[in-house]
Image (tube, rainbow, N blue to C red):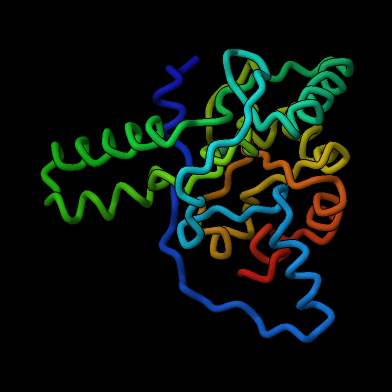
Length: 223
Ligand SMILES: [Zn+2]
């Protein structure tokens, strides 16, 4: 396996946000939007929606010394247990990260780019396209988890071919999870295809999102 720091810096590659504005809503969908925006399960965190400053979720341990939002951890454990009953071998390789941890990952990336000869201004900008800026990663929210196949722990596109990902992509919504960064939504999410990153949004939203093949930004009218 590869060291966990390498795994974590290898992911969350952000593409530049395109700055598109949301669509205009009528009255009915407006109240639905308001309902969504007050739901903790649907908090949007991305490059243009940083986390509320000082936000710290109540945490509960999953496994491998990783933690998850205490309100949703049982659904994650249920999903892992049910898949394992079918013979799948999941490996949790990231979940909640503190802002400090995210800052370490980000600053480490900046230093490495500067060591390669990049100016500090360019390095600061470039680093954000590879490691999410502190406060803009869903891992800081406590509702995201990275799950890989134990016998294939690489964070790359081939991960999708493992039996573990095939099962997760088909069944995750039943436990309230979505594949957060699908291959055909990199423009809307600003993040590369990540067939290992799952986000808890609750069963109702998860069903709708996975059934329609949309991403969270589109579901929330923020794409
Ligand atoms: Zn992730």
